[in-house]
Length: 276
Image 1 (spheres, rainbow, N blue to C red):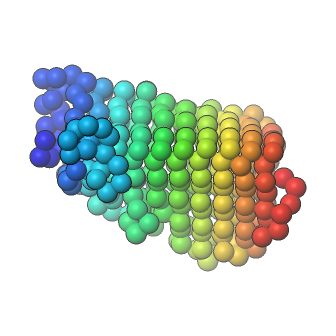
Image 2: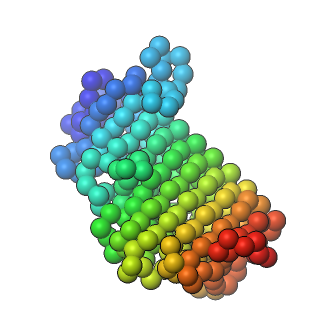
């Protein structure tokens, strides 16, 4: 198709439920006016090579300007998502969406990041072989990925959170009985606000859990407070197996809270190798 507009997406649902839409390069809108574009249940957007022989890759992937709301059984595969809706925009949002798949996708950029890459509530999603660029925009609290009563599996992906203005910065916020699996992935986080109270790579709260396997986490708060992993109640837990955790800041800690377990992790605190 030549474009992706809300009226067309809604019409396709009535004519062809669970529509799968293929794009061969190019740039398209992904918005409903000044808001995100909603994909209806079962719809998917795929980037393909020019000859339709396989998934698109690199700069050959189609670009979409805007953001998506996913309602369930949706796939975003082999695309580039550009933030054209403003600095406080969330790239992908879902309330109640199940079986969501995001693969081989670039979400935002270093020069034009989203406030948040993913915000999931009562949802279930997979993020694979993808990159997220988030900054928090002008919000007082930055959360690169937000989970509430949700399950998210991140595999072979990179999460980049760079913030210069927030008071609290969380790269991944796992809340309200949520579960995160972070596998073979990388999380890079930097925060430089003079008003910063704390920069936290991954926080689990309200009976939530995070399993981090063979992944690398880097946190730098530029002489402010920084924390690698944090739990805030005795029902939440974080386990990190293999990989590395590096934390730098004037007041820095690898981990704060109960039920945090390290197994075979290489840890660095303010440039020095330490025991996890």
